[in-house]
Image (cartoon, rainbow, N blue to C red; front, top):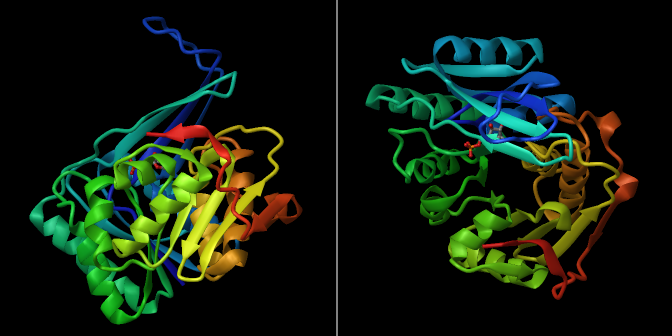
Length: 315
Ligand SMILES: O=P(O)(O)OC[C@@]1(O)O[C@H](CO)[C@@H](O)[C@@H]1O
C-alpha cells in the first residue's frame, strides 16, 4: 500500500481563458474542479493504476467537504483529519497558448491539537504502508522540521519514505535520510543555492542532496526530462510528448509512477517519465490511467547528457 500525506491539500480550480489581460474581466471558456495537493494527486495516480492507496489529509470547511466528496467519487480511500480552518482553494489560469498561471493560497493554520492528530494519523496508517509519500507545502502552524519528524517516526516502523517538498522543509528532512526526494529543477537549485544551466549541473546538485542525507534523488527537469541519482549512479529519462495541455500535477503523477514500479532503479525512472509525460497531455490535474501511458515513447539511459543545456534553466 502507498500512503500519501498532504498537510496542505487544496480544492484545485482550473479556468481556461483566451489570454490573461491584467485589469480586465476575463470570461472563462471552460472550468474544472479537482481534489488537489501533491500527495492527493499521488494517491489519485496510484489508484488510477489500480493499486491500493490511502491519503492522509487535514480537511476543513465547505472546500474540505467538497475535496472529500470528489475523492470519494474517484474511489480514493481517505484518512481525514478534521480541522477548524477551511481547506484552501488554488486557482490555475490556463491560457489558449498553453501558458498556465497558478495561484496557491496559504491554507488554514493548524492548531497544536490538529498538528498532533495529523502526526498520529500518519503514524497509525503507516503500519500497512510499503511507501509513504509526504508531499507539498506545509500549512501555517507546522514547523519546517515537521516532515523530518514524520520521516524519523515512520522509518522506525520500516516503511520507506518519498518526500516532495522544498525550501527549509526539504533541507530539515534530509538529515533523517528519506529514501527518495523529488525536487523539480527550481527546488533543486534552491536547495544547493546556485543556478542550474545544464543536465550536468542538475546531476551535481542531486549528488549534493545525497551527501546531505537523501538516499536517492528523482529530479524532474520539466520539458528536459528526469534524472535519477542514487548509490548505483545516475540515469536520465525523457519522453516524446505531442502536445502539452496542463503540467499541474505532472510531477505528482511521475512520483506515483516511480513508486508503483518499485521506487528504485532505471525501470522505476522509466515509469516515472511515462506517467509524467501522460499527465501533461491531460487537462487540469487529471491523472493518467494505464491506457494513457506510452512506454514506447520513453528513453532511459545511464549515458547522462551532462553538457545538454536546460530548456528551462533554474535559478
Ligand atoms: O502549495 P503546494 O503544496 O506546494 O502545491 C499545491 C499544488 O499546486 O500542487 C499540486 C500540483 O503538484 C496541486 O494539486 C496543488 O494546487
